[in-house]
Image (tube, rainbow, N blue to C red; front, top):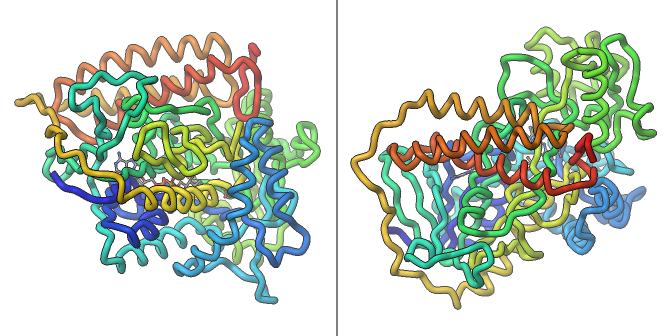
Length: 518
Ligand code: FAD
Ligand code: SIN
């Protein structure tokens, strides 16, 4: 059994930026299930949206209005205003921690344009903004004496009264988090980590779908853990599909062609060369993501094609290479010369707008459990996230959670009565093919029935099919020795259930949720 003031689960932008601040007030332990930098953060391309004081043709109010309009009337306006108002301070902190955002010749920030934004306001580091932020944050983390970062530790469940034999229901008042049970993937043992404050920073859940831009670690573990512990979760029907993932069968996850490329002037065309976005929205290729993804999906269904074209051939290629070296090189490596060839693109799952329901301080419905970053549902995104608002939300809520938690730290005590993980042994050795096959089946079901377009029949079928996978997996989970693979499958099934149920419950089409029977 180990003890730490702050247990941070996840080493993306949310977890790392929280840790750097909390370390002023106590001992911080970060655990992460893969290599230290593996995260959605690492792959972020376009950048981070913010209106800085020097902006001439933009205002905080414009950023607020764009966020609200993109969110399809479902954002929490108070939260939107908080996030936008605090964006400047958080950007300055990222810069102080070493992040370099590109500047133009006059020395001011080179701001990019993305879908749904009414002005150029996206700070970026070429087209590898996430890698730049992740690298610089990790450098700071390694220098901090109060922070310990452990890789390849997998959080299985958070600890609550339930583990002391108390019956906990979803509406039980005072559910409290005392830390987490952590699987050491090297020894195969589950360790107990007690914490005064536990922070869920576990990121998204793209692996629920067959086609996603998210890396394989994005299995929604934090949301499943919070839900199993009877915490509140919401907004799960709002799955964001990025309109322009590179169409390249056999590559998994999908490589993203940043929205900033359309902000730079690229246009979408059907395979026969016709522009089509104006028929769907007057903002054309730069309409919000839900609209563009639905339009592409409709065009692909009409023509029977597997992709549409993203046409960059009219753009200044020298400038293109400077802005998007990562995208340029990836395309070239596949024989696509963006100066002459159009890029084949198709929508892919990209972001989860819902998650663990939190208040304005990032506090979940479970005491001493905070949730920040993509695993949380703050109210910022509503029915559809505005491009580049995710990295911003993560740093703003990491800060707010840190302030709230550190002010309370001295009044929180370890619970010394927590039992060790209840492992019944000996357990059977897992037959991996059963896990990998179930994961693939789940991804097929969710992609076919709970994708961009849904219907009552599809949702019903998805629920029935996933119920079977649930029953099979629970049985294996109770019989087999524990492994990250079986835990992830279990979590993915939990997430799918939450997505399907939320989609069934929403009877009007809003933002990213579109049921053809509504
Ligand atoms: P992540 O960065 O995903 O980190 C989650 C961490 O939790 C990881 O370290 C993971 O290993 C760990 N973890 C998960 N489960 C467990 C467990 N059970 N035990 C231990 N550790 C665990 N957003 C923008 O705003 N701008 C962009 O330009 C942008 N571009 C994007 C491009 C791509 C290709 C992708 C995939 C996303 C992009 N996004 C962008 C979204 C944004 O990157 C993410 O929403 C954001 O980085 C999430 O940060 P996070 O810290 O919440 O989670
Ligand atoms: C992109 O670069 O298109 C991704 C931006 C985002 O997800 O916010």
